[in-house]
Image (cartoon, rainbow over all chains, first blue to last red; front, side):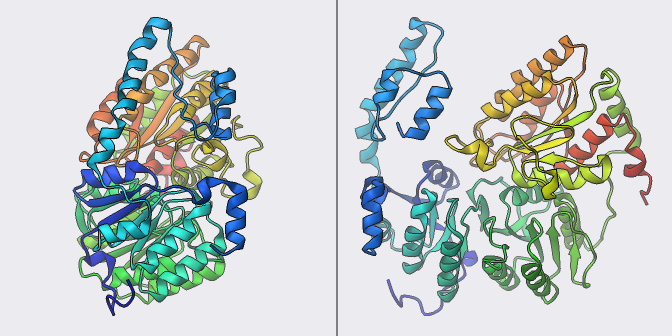
Length: 61
Length: 488
């Protein structure tokens, strides 16, 4: 993904194409407005297991 | 999902028993309250139908498991909308920035250090991070998060407050004006620690944007260092800038004007667009009409009814009301007060004149936001109606994407019951509201207004006017001198 565009065009000048992570209603509302959107089936890392997460974070993962 | 928090909410709602206790975070609990066994049949059948059809629904859509694979599927994506729990938000937002995406970060509870790091990373890449804790943006006419369907036009907004964008944009829309873009920055952007990185970037983008003729900045008053930085950028701008640091009003340099309320900000912005400035009026309709309406609202009140109780879903609207009310009626208690000494001891019980932000942390943990779920506000409305000291209940009703599908239907019966309850105690309860919305919103402003008026709600065209009107009613007209006395 690096160096694709030397000068990033302002978001205000682009047609929005959205990746949604989280609340699904936001993706639905964008679709109702005719915006292309793709939803990630997001899950918390380590299945949300607090202990495992702390270990992963320690390892810098 | 049967997380400990959700289980607590269920238990509080009266769903007790071993099934609830045994369920774990990977289990889905569907709780149905019904009058009898028979009434249960149809919802249970519907749930079974939905559960069995889930597989076929899934197949229709590609659902990548990670942001990286989503970028592969949609290689020209340019924005990530992130609303996952705050503690995971930084990692995903950073991934998005590294993939060249601008970010709208709805998640709250993101540590301040992470916010600084994300915003610096975005700046280095020429990208924008709207948030964390960002409720609303409107980019190229597209509403992200909670927002109204408003016209396109020449006013650009940069705002730390989502409901601030909603109030100003709907007021402009009502006057036939529109937005170029509204850039939400997140509630903490103007804290001294973050220093307004997104606000500064937003101003720069709107200055470069040829569709934008006027810029409006909205925030609660920032810290002194950040305030000076932003005001400096505003006065150096190549476009007129209306600065609305709620409650602060001094006139600044020629290109920069200060608006005390959101309503002022909309009026001043439209003045710049139309090329003629208009003076401030306390109400859109004439003094005599307002006075006679207030008189009829208070005529059947008992002597004990002295106080205003504001029940807000929008934090900034709650704040704006305090800015409007304090000079009229004196101290207003709140869980989000103008001054620390006006903090209410217990936000679940009103005291004297009070404005409660029901979207604050203490109310929303484990529940949807009050713009979506009216249940807490409905209970509170009845509680206020039982209190013999309540004269006026003040409400905000926020329409648009993200909000409740039909707020009027949701609260209409409760308002009627509240009025009855007060009536049974030989009192008259006045309910005053403003609707933040437009005719084009999914909920339709006109329809909502009609239904609320049918149960005796007095509707005002803005949140500020609703607060002024409430003061006029609760004071039995006494604040009229302050309101109308020095009108030009």
